[in-house]
Amino acid sequence: MTQNDLSPPRADAADVVRAAHHQIGNSLQSVASLLRLESRTAPPDAATVLSEAGRRVRAIMHLHQRLQEGGGDLVRLDDLLGDICRDVAELDAVDRNAEIRVDIEPLYAAPGAASALAMITAEWVGNALEHGLAKRAGVIEVKLELADGGARLTVADTGVGSSGGDWLPGFGTSLVSRLAQQLGGRISRSIDQGGSRFELTFPGAGSAPA
Image (cartoon, rainbow, N blue to C red; front, side, top):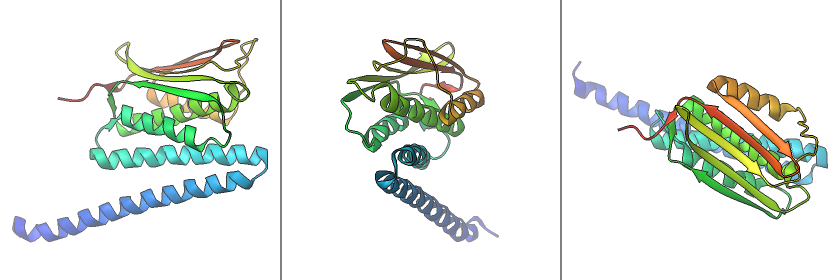
């Protein structure tokens, strides 16, 4: 069989893959929209859970979009994490007086690492809005930079913090810990009356390939 004979089946397969990815993206969008609608009419406790679930689904949706745009090999992190920060702010059901400042270097990572970073960023920014800035105005700063042979993600806020430096465990905390382990990263955190600061240092991210 010649190369020309193989061309039509390959083209058909590529069309099927593109259609499948399009359907996946639409399905993720539908799930995220449904969770958002449900959170608006649910009791407060349930609304918080639904909102957090919607935030996580949208993080996966943005990752899927970036993978398709980049061909699936590497993900540009400033685009992805910028989308995540905007989404978290837009999906927040409470009209808070909060400013999110984003300073993310144009670094790249493999899809698995990018997925973990997207979820961690969504959790930390969402936590800052829902807890640190729940009852006061303030600023959330999100920064990603090269550091220690890898990269460092920092999310800090000027919220209420905690005079005792307490840290309340929950699903989000466990999720971030597992994702950091997958990255081979190290988490540090500080919580005081001046607000909260979370840092993740990890390998596997770098500048654009030549």
